Image 1 (cartoon, each protein chain N blue to C red):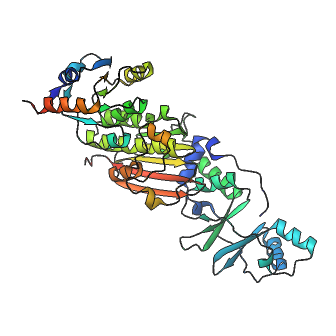
Image 2: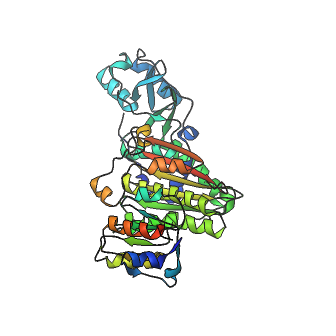
Length: 310
Length: 114
């Protein structure tokens, strides 16, 4: 694949963009109409497809599984070298990195900032090609979503009006969290606790939500390159969403096992790293979801119902 | 249920930050650990927290679980910054030179006595 200007690193984006990127899925923005070829097609076939459809990259598939990619750069090279009648299998880029359609858009943004590619094939749970995502797809989706919310944004402080997210929203805030910034760890959970106390929520529910929030804050601080944590409270629930920029979790099942930890000795010296963070968060939550992509990031959503007590 | 003052006296603990009225705080139980994750999974209300950790995060964790006070065990000197953090968060903070085990033994005897 041809090199591309790198996307702005995710951690430097505004909180609003980071939040949007955490809520949208890759499938929401990808191009579903994909022109793919099999390994026996010629470079000339691909060149014709590119020209007639105004596209600059064509995936090569074998039984719907992506095995390579042909870019404009590959076609130009084939033209110069006289390879246009060769099968694409001879000249395609192999080892293509794909994205999963269920992943948050933030994963795709991380991928564009970390790898010099202009497009990524998108696959479903069966690893079958279902779409393509480019920076243009991402930009268009973000612009549309931002436009939709523009009227609702009050200030750049991170607060938005309740109407922007839910008619019932009573508190909404996004926190930027930096790697190894233990000094700031717990600020979101402290504010969550205050907000819930002010609204007369029972102490056990407050404790569950505050601990879940704190665990997720510390996870970002201790185990990621940084990220955001979003608090949303409405009449029925508290929703805590943690998004980070990597390095991602290779084995989520293992990470959810009590006692498993990748913490360094220094992190352990701070009292953390017992391998209880994610299991504890899940235990305390009424709803829990986690997604992670290696080199792209991790997203955890925890919901605690108000009034649910134990 | 015991008054915080009696527990503090039992450990010969000294105040680092002691907001007015701390003496009469009601304590239902005691939990001792140097692992934040352990602290976070403690159950119960009005639990006095004992730890030898000197991190701000001990205070944050204490606030998260609603611990009424924190005692730093096996500590002769406490960083000034930690005292300031306790004052900022409004959490009573004490320290004792007794080791954690000895502190727990004394508090156990006290809590079980009529």
